[in-house]
Image 1 (cartoon, rainbow, N blue to C red):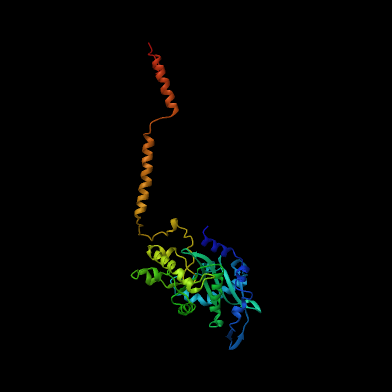
Image 2 (cartoon, rainbow, N blue to C red; image 1 turned 30 degrees about the horizontal axis):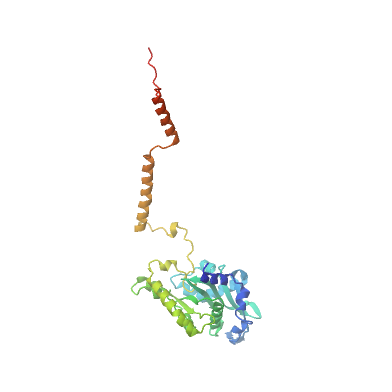
Amino acid sequence: MSRKTGRVRRAVNASSSDILDCLGENPSMCVANINIVATLADAELFLSPSIRVLRSSELTDEEKNAMWGLFEDNMHALYSDSSFGWKPAKRKKEIFHSLSRFLVVGDSEDENKILAFSMFRFENEEGENVVYCYDIQISSHYHRTGMGKKLIDLLCTIGKAFEMEKIVLTVLKTNTKALAFYRACGFQIDPNSPSEYLPADDPRKNDIDYEIMSKDLPRPGIPTSTCEAVLSAEIMLSTTLRTARPCVCRIPGRRYASHGAPQFNEPSGYLFGEKPLPPGQKRVKEDWENLWYWGMFGSMAFAAVMLYYKPDTSIQTWALQEAKNRMEARGEKYKYEPSSSS
């Protein structure tokens, strides 16, 4: 197991209390110091939020329903108008996956009241250890209170504590407010984003309606300026290698956050993952497939011919021939010849 893979595994195996401990003695203060004031029913509501770190398995059904309701309120229209469409069952499976972690912001007086949440996972993307932020959902009553910025800061703290290299997320291009927010938080277009690695004349580039953004996390104990100087060569090399790879099959196999695309490709149920072609269309075999078929069936035919004309070298045949030779040497008759009747 490599050192990088070991870091991700250590983060994945960390308990919720371990992650909460890395946020400080009182992580709720990170959110409480915003002095949240929300306008609800023409009245100002002062809140004292609290924050919890939970696994998907640690959420109650009521909390899951509240989170899904918050996600649906914020994202239904955006997903319906996107190329991915609104697929509730698939989206629920992604959000409440067994590896999902949650930063849940709730009212300290009523924990069942969820003000906001962020769902994230520890993953290795293109050889880099990252905190993949799938969702940051905030109730509409608490927008523009600084809560989203604080959640990003908490994710950065978690990523640094577990020696992750950056935070990655995906956002729809039509979600202009989210794009502006993430840029204000220090995010930039990631080299893995289709708008970066696809050639300018690639027709698929116009069909991509999302961007992958990332924010580098400085290594612990190293000043930011020094960290950037040390990592510049690595970033340049990794970017060059990514752009040099063929882009033909990159889009279907990539993994994206819930802002724009499915996180993983589910089994298609078809042979080799290929869907059957529409009626009237015939699949054209690739060169390697033709070579494979010719090689396989040619080898089978050659083996069949060789077995058919293979000389008989069994011990029984040798023993019979040896006995015939000895009988012939002694002048004995070894062939049966029926006597003619008189």
